[in-house]
Image (cartoon, rainbow, N blue to C red; front, side, top):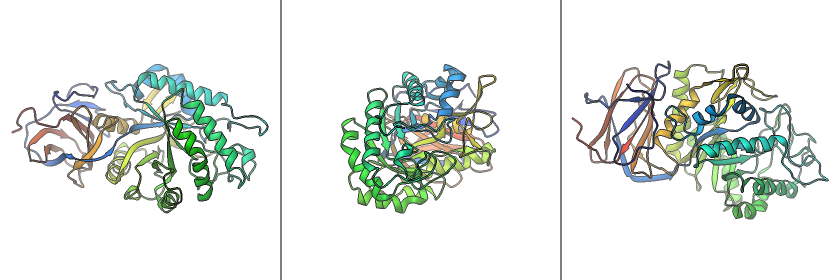
Length: 441
């Protein structure tokens, strides 16, 4: 076994494989290929092209902005540099347009109805953080969403909880357009959703419910301006078990929405299948409810990567990029969520969490712009495959069985492409040329 290494292999290069063990004995470590007899064969058909892959990432919450700054530039490199040998190699950032539960002040743009929409200090700080990400990864794309409108637009007259007032659609639309026009020239803004989790209201942190009619009305109002900025409009931004609501939005707002956005907190990823538009996972988090790396790897690889991608998903975004050892800074909402990394403000040291390696494995198999391709299915080795623009094929998966496996990856004609060995519970990625460079025994 050699030391961790970066991805982006050119088409003529040899195959490369990486593994992360749940006991952390190896972390995104590069593996040697082997010639031993295979115990598992996976067959990839890189001629059967599916959806285009956008990438992986997490949210730049207020907590993340503060902690990433405290940790220093090395952490941003580890999270976003596409050539970092042991990094997550993420390229997506979800950007809240208001305070969330991971804020210490409940801010929104345009607090005064007599004023005009303008960014707050928190919004400006987040913009600076995203610009620092973009400087490290030119493929960065930003997905924006507000958790709440200003209090004066809501029936609760507060940022926490409540619903958008019936007559506030025009004002809220003006706000979203102003935010889009502020962001688009400054960062690579790829998409906007009308609101985060439109079916959820909490009196402990910024949230806002909206009816289907309101969501469609606002989408119709903002669509021309959003499109003029080259920005997509994403629908729903809520859980898998809200599929019926999504169907109503896509039917009632035909042509308004480009992508269906899902969270992982209810239902199953099968809800992402059979849609008339592409889909994406835009929020999920690990936490103290499961501190086992082994079970975290198993659940997240299957439910956030394999099943969603098979159902048509084009992206994976997790929740907080960074949290402190006390699962904050936070006010209300989730009290035991886990960031992709944990940053200790006292020492400014950071620790990668299981989600860091999940993102890293997906990124090594699939670059932005890759196409999903067909891969044979095995219950004990859940995996998905991609054809990359550089001529390579990538596979990300897990040895979910109890025995060490020698995995042979073959093409649709039965020719062996590469063979590698993974331990029980390990995540793996493998990537290389679509045609074998030399025969495998």
